Image (cartoon, rainbow, N blue to C red; front, side, top):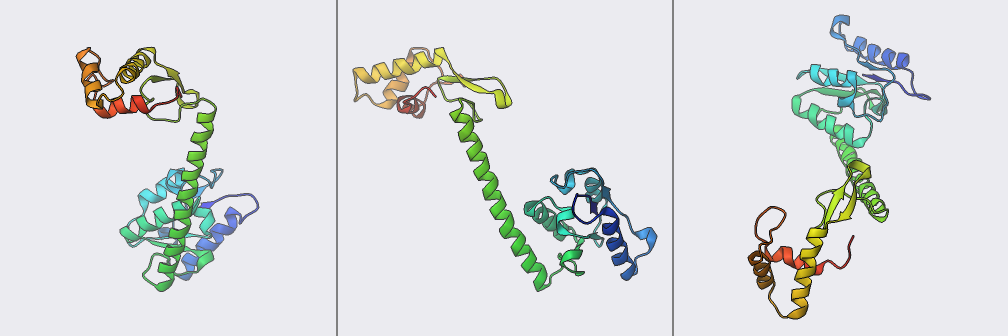
Length: 226
């Protein structure tokens, strides 16, 4: 498997390494298939690249996949770990030439060590992805945007994707105001009693079902209109 990138090993050099490995293993020319993703960004997961997808569909148990370098076949540690695990389950050998000529998917101690290192990097990567997502949501919320999921009761989402923003839902806000008014009149009123009063007045939740106590509690807990 080859992947081009500026400032790194050329595709010709990568192919030379792969063909040399195959020759040293006694693999006949007709048993060797080179998969090339020229012009495709290395930031894309292997299975989503055109040739990478073909490779993933073509390999069978007992086959050996060779890449000249780890970073030429995988976009990141998480992608590497996913493919490693898949190949391990399917009985496909994976050789990363810059790490040696022994398949990293075998049961040797080195294979287990590499797997542990990959797992550690993947865990770190997952955490960084989660942090970036949270940071993005916080920034979007600060800008008044919608951060995903259903809008809180009393609001509606207007727009889609990055343009989505929360807007006041007048009908629902009127119900919230009514509940708070009732609570103001009788601060000791049980939440169940308030929910029952809403339902008896003919009001219904978004689902069309009667209001539950937990939904009424959330109305009372909401302090802002954002």
